[in-house]
Image 1 (tube, rainbow, N blue to C red):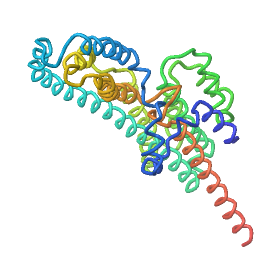
Image 2 (image 1 turned 30 degrees about the vertical axis):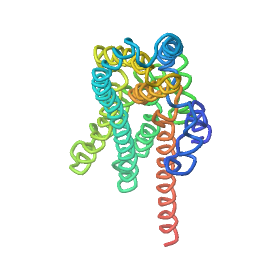
Image 3 (image 1 turned 180 degrees about the horizontal axis):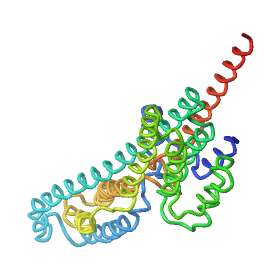
Length: 352
């Protein structure tokens, strides 16, 4: 019920500039105007080290131009150190590649886990709709509706949860608006007040299944027992993507590695104008800043990718809002098709 209002609330937190269309990544704009856009690149994560490199470069280059000739002893000594400096640049490149690879792996793993979440939600809804259509006497419409509610509401609870800690009252209000008219009042109160809403929703789904299958004649029905096992697997399977994304969001890369990489990176970038100013002369300033922008950009990209969910999303964060909309529309269509099929069968029965 009321999908437009729900979806409007879900999509309200993602600005238009944070929506990324996969098909546009290969068009002409991706190689022209997008190259000069700074939003979504994480530049705010590296403005401080870039400023330090700029200060060192702008301060050192005039000193070299004023006091040291290319043949001076100082420039000769710096030239002799160039070989050792290149070795440091090589080692730094490997560290940066490893850092970006780890971040990209986390980003892709999170997307895979979101895919599994959608698979389990679809299975839960499809199986329950098909079960009621095939055996309405053994599988009640109420159970079908409760499980379909979980399939629509779980992605919302998942999204709000992986966004990270926030004011509980604010998140409760968001949950109620994003799940408007899905659950009945007692269930909504139970879920919105839960500290861990996704876990509470999985518990709710298991309680619905237990009420349907673990009482009465359903316990002795082999076919119902198999259906129960299948639906229980789908409900419990929602915990896997939940736990995996909690791990990704809550586990940063090792502190020692990140601190050493950043210290090493900053020292090398500040050393570039010192070592090469005698050879590059006034070109030292733009060239040093260009190198700093490139290498610090890799670090900024790593920071952006390693936590792929955010309440203030960019193009780098997974569009969980879209997943919520897709599942809401799909489950609504399933129920509409089932209702149309039931009405058609009833009309055919009455006509005969």
